[in-house]
Length: 204
Image (cartoon, rainbow, N blue to C red; front, side, top):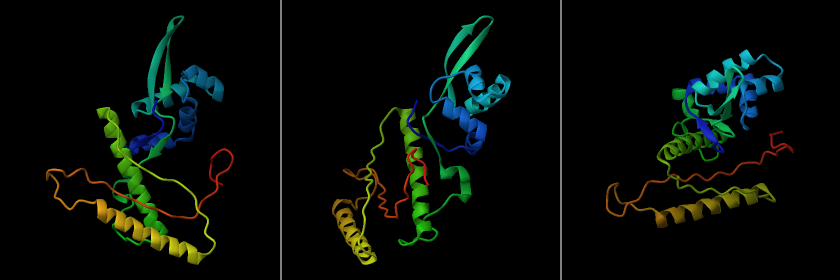
């Protein structure tokens, strides 16, 4: 089981958004069968079996083992990931495009950047998993409290200057394919008001 996976197929995204299937996926973080899930949720086993087939068809659950129970075989399944992120790529032409209206001070532009980040990293991760290779990434997550709006503005100006200087110092202008030229990397730096979490980790 993976810690987190992206869902890129629109049909798989639709399957995962069904309320009952979301419950079943949550229950299958630990291996279980149609019978155990049906008993836990208080619904017919046949109904659970139907939803399990849909989830399995889209690669959201997988067979762990088969156990012989009298005259039938019980299928033990588990979610393929502990959590999922639906890629904006599942929306096709409706996915956000940061190139449409680049504005460093726009929350919608930041959202478009974040959407592209989810899509791209999800694509890289899926490919790396198939190739059994790691993805070279780096991220910083922190919080900062400003005394005033002026301090926040000064911070953003200084941050932009430092990052611009750092990029200029390390970026190579060589054309792709030239000896010594590595892979192109994308850098995203974001600053936004923090949204407090509740005790269970969900947004308030």
